[in-house]
Length: 242
Image (tube, rainbow, N blue to C red; front, side, top):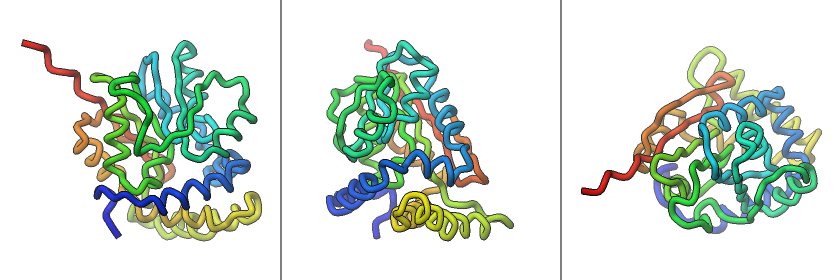
């Protein structure tokens, strides 16, 4: 298996992930609230705050639009575009939040259909551990953000070493799939959540990947005993012309 920084094109992986998120779209927000004890909204609010003042924002893997709603709450005059490759997620968001002033678009995070430097910021919530090409996904967000703009990532992170690690691991691998079986009827999807989180990069290594993409990392925060990470990075301004 390739490491998370290696460029890999895997259409079959993308197909499986798209189908999985399509299956759980109707219960996605409920499950997020249950498995995070309601803290997921606060994390998304922190991600929205991390992008700073902006007029044009891209929400990659927008899902039902919860993160986009936080961005618009902070910046009501902004234009926010939400993309997701799972059409049922976009439909569920439109049905559950018809009042949200969000421009929705079905698109793949590895091939964003926007010109270079189209946005002041790109933000994503729980996207990066799902892509088959981590560097490619980061590079696409860097590409569509203007010089001086920001890339903000909210992501699951492996439990840190310590006395509470066995408890966190048991919660991820046993309790969450059990809750998914009860409330979402799809334990395998949330078994994948646990496995993909355990196999993903710690916050410090994800920061390294952002830096490798040419970004300047300006903030790294963790929540829930280190199992959730929030990173904010800035795209360097263009050098002045001589």
